[in-house]
Every structure is written in C-alpha cells, then in structure tokens.
Image 1: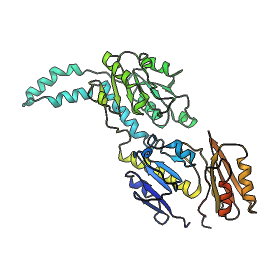
Image 2 (image 1 turned 135 degrees about the vertical axis):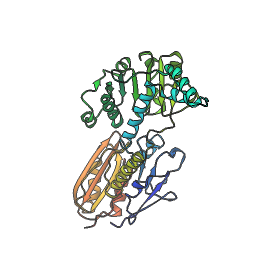
Image 3 (image 1 turned 180 degrees about the vertical axis):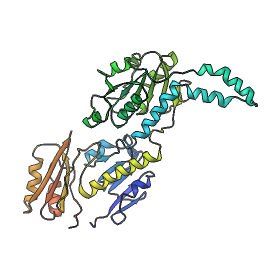
Image 4 (image 1 turned 180 degrees about the horizontal axis):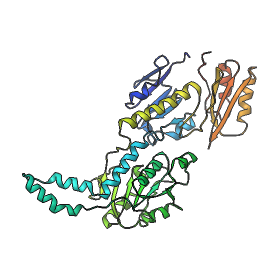
Length: 396
C-alpha cells in the first residue's frame, strides 16, 4: 500500500493511539494544512473552518457536542467516536459519587481540614464530639435508578448490584448487546417517571439531544422521594439546573453530584461538583485514542465504518484490491446509478455493500479492475451523491 494519509490532531492524543498509524503510510501532526482526517478530544470544531480535504473526523471520547456533525453529514464525512472506551473510568467515578453522598464524605473531610487545634489530644476530642453531624447510611437495600443503559450505564448497574443495592434501569433504546451484558438482577422500570418514584439515587447516562435536554425537569424532580441523590456524569444540559438548585434548597434533594460545575452550583453545600473527571484516567484516554485510531484507519484504508455517530455501520471484507466508497443520500435508484457508472467503463462489479442510516446512505463497490478518475467523476455527478473516492490499492 503506497497511499499516505495526513492526520491533523487538535488536542493532545494519547501516544497509544497515535502509534496505531504506521509512519510509512501516515503523517500525524497538529499543523497539517490539508488533512485527510482530524483527531480531536475537546477542541471546539464549531469555531473552525474544516478543510474540504477532510474525509473523516475522529473523537477520542464518546460525546461529539464539540463537532459540527450535521454539517459534516451534508458533506459526506463520517464522524467516529469511542463508545464504551471510557466506561470503566466513568463507572468508578459514579461509584465514588454514591459513597461520597451516602457518607457525607466531602463535608466531613472539609470539617477536619479546617480544624486548627495544635495537639492531637484536643483534635481527637473535637473529632469525636462532631462526628455525629456527618452520620450517613449504607448502600445495601437502597435503590439506584440508572437512566440510560449503554456501555457506562450497564457497568454502573452491575457494580451497584454487587454492592448490595437494588437497581432499576430505564432505556427504551437499549441494544441487544447491552442487554446481554446486564445482570438479570437489574429491574426494568415501566418508564422514566416510574424509575424516579422508586429510586433513592438516580444516575444519568444519556447523550445530550433535543429529546434529552432538561430530561430531569422541575416536574420530574418532584417525583423523587424526599432526600434523594441525583448524579449527573452524562452532560450538563440533561437536567434543569434551576430546578435542581431549588430542590437542594428545599431538601427535596439531599445531594447533586455532577461532573459539570457552574458558578451557581460550585459553592452550594449540597452540590458536589467535580472538574469533568469522567474519562480522566490514563487508561481511558489510551482506550479512546486506540479505538478511534483503529476506526479511522479502517475507514481511510478500506472504507469500512464502525462506531460512527452519523453514518451506518458498513463492513465489507476486503478480498479484492480495487474498491470505491460512495457516501450519498438515502434515496431510490442510487445503487443502479452507481452500477451503471461503473459498467460504462466495461468494469465488472465483484462485490457491493449498500447500507443506510436515516437520510444517509453509504455504498462500497469492489471491482475486478482499477477504477478510473472518470468513473469517480461520473459517480460524483449523480444527484444525491455526497462524495466518492478510490480506496488505496491492496498489495497483491
């Protein structure tokens, strides 16, 4: 394979991921002017002009709010992410949040830190006299409601069961894969409102979208048993923050544990705000970088698509050296028009894959002869085709 791809990095990406790009085929740097792909973590791509050379964008993480996905879809550019690569890191942070809230650990730690007694004897007496104000409770027999049963939610649910908690889950879009991974001890809520009324703790693991914005609203907060704990390690916007503050003030919520600090929340005695630590482990950063790097390579070299947020999954075994990849709108007669464009050049189609996701379609075509620029231009001229490219020739 002689193709050389250029990858632009917009943030520091873990070396474990960058090493997945062979140097003889890839140039990876932060200052590349016309990249074939972009690797990003937190950089705000809404504020940048994305070069027309870009064929794909890879997010070394799960959320893609910092990427203009809709615009890239219109250009026929898939956006890849790394779902589940940081699941264990987030799961551990959620469990920490459960313990912090149940045992009043932050308040207890802050109390001891502020004591200015100079002798251990006096300090010991102060601590013994004051510890009653930090009495908490144990997790077994308490009920945890898990909203969203993807990679993270399932791990949280299983871990909470192992701690002896009762666990209720809700996710109308749960996949078969995640259902197999989830313990049979997790109870199914009829709906979100049912989950809220039965839970002492609620942890959120849903993406931010039009459907989930303010999912935990003022009305829904009223469904929680008095003194419940709400944990948000998903996205800030899935809760109504004004309503959460009011619930903390009234005692309806005993704690709000979140990875998304705000000016209003950070000093509240019943809000435990962490500085977006969800995926902040060396292992998670490496897992995310490796997963997205491998998916980018598979797309750039073979046209296959895995873990894209805007394109369908498309995996066609690469048994022949000559392949064309065609992102297009999901409209009738697309396959016949692509096939006709190839047959005009007297080239036989050996294999083909056509898949779709919403308005986006994607077609891979394997040929018995090398594709020509004329064929590609003919395909690009089809109404509804977003782009077309010849894949690198496999070494025979």
